[in-house]
Image (tube, rainbow, N blue to C red):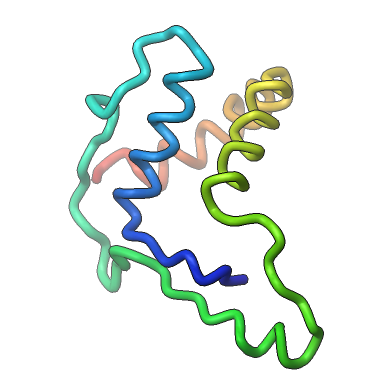
Length: 102
């Protein structure tokens, strides 16, 4: 669902890195960004129009992107055990298969 906050993907990545670097002391910075060859049809941004959901269901975003991404990051940092579980084993195998040769 859109929220009238369209941003380029790289801007979103940089905002995530900036916030995470404030929250953890582990050398988190933009040097972690790894540019890969774009896949066919790759998008540089996602422009999602929320008009239909507003008109049909009356839904409007209550949280803007900056606040929402901070809340999301905080949740992941507060639930590290869950993160460790989903980023190991079969999940890790999937990621390696999908992204190893990019």
